[in-house]
Image (cartoon, rainbow, N blue to C red):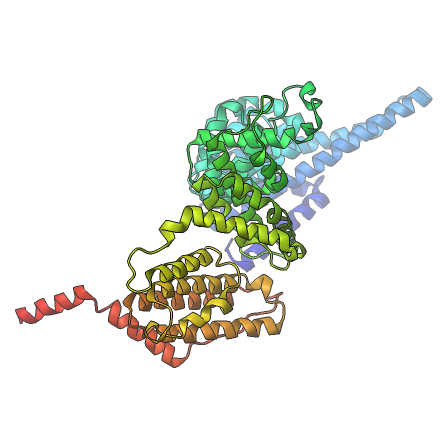
Length: 620
């Protein structure tokens, strides 16, 4: 059969035809003739005949399995009816039962013929399409009619086919096995298979095909034992998000869900017993992270657990209370290392709630969010803004001596929702601002201030330090505040080059964020027009800075303008059609020429090129 839409249409219609044919001719002499024909043609040297007849054979057997199952149900119901009638009349009249049993006997004989044919088909055929087809149907038969098919012979065949070099064949085997292990009644028949092929399944979590690896991990969720956890749980740091999420489900269900109070008495000690379960889960998670010794991957661990453990990770009041509590004799508290890690997890959960699962180096993430996901994301931003407006000053005050904790906590305000009702709480905002200023002065004062200025270096250092602090909060709307600084040269009373570098980096980051979040922010034409005007103004002032006397300012301007224009191009390609679309902005011809000139003068004609030109000229 050919591939493509026509081939898929023929396959679907042909399968339906075989199902109708079996239902209409199951007791006819035509069935024996059809079985003989398919047996011969499935061994044909012509690929088209062999593939088509194999499809017909497996669908024929699938239909017979369905018929046999319906007959089994009919036999069971007839036997119950027969027993009821026998108790009533004390007379034996089993004509109907004999007729049904005769039908089953006939079908079992026909099924035996096709089973012998299938042994040849899925063991010896060299075409991967046929092997894949047979594995998919075999898994269906073993699940639906386990009394005839779920035996060691068929299981062994499926186990060996997991070594097939074609990913789709391996995938069909794994998907078939998932159907067996979810049925408790079939588990006793799978003990031998599990002991023999479990190592192979564990190795398939590293399969070169991502879908095979993910489905294998989901299968191992059903059969893995504590001895396998050490190897499987490390996959939460995988670069493939679906595989990492499946490993996160294993971590949450096997390790974190089992962490709880050791006795019932502990639950009744005091009113804080309600919070012991999330606390014990968090401590188990901290222990797992520290034992894994991958100390730069907290955000990836949080992302892996997000699909199943978001409720735990977004329990910011509990996380905050654990970090703020003082150690006592009853509760020793966390070590300094655990506190640092828990702060990183807190910040990572805030970022995940605000921005979604988009991490550098991790693929397989759904790029387009639906309306429900955007609403959840907006609600989470509102909750975290309400909570951290009050809690963040306390956290900064407690961990003010730890530069690592402060560096992590200072990222949280970037994710605040400006439209949040509690953001008008002047007292809370003032307290947060004052605490942030104190912390910044303590940890970043000397390092943020420059050490090589000419005139007015103290005043210039203060300005530069302020700009660096503002750049840390580029996710706030600072465009109107900072963009005027790009319009005047330092010789004419404008900002010095060091300050312009900070302004350019901050404005380009603001513009890129505005363009990347346009799916949620562009809700009307007025907002789209305002964004395009902002983009036009940035490019206009960037064009002015390309002619700045300082080379580093020129270079940063070139990088910033190119990054923003690239983000705008990506915005036009990825915008959600259900939302209001962005408005196209085209750089002016003067800006295009200026960028092209900079590229030619500073990229393709550098010192190396000039020295090479000089050497070639001398040789001539």
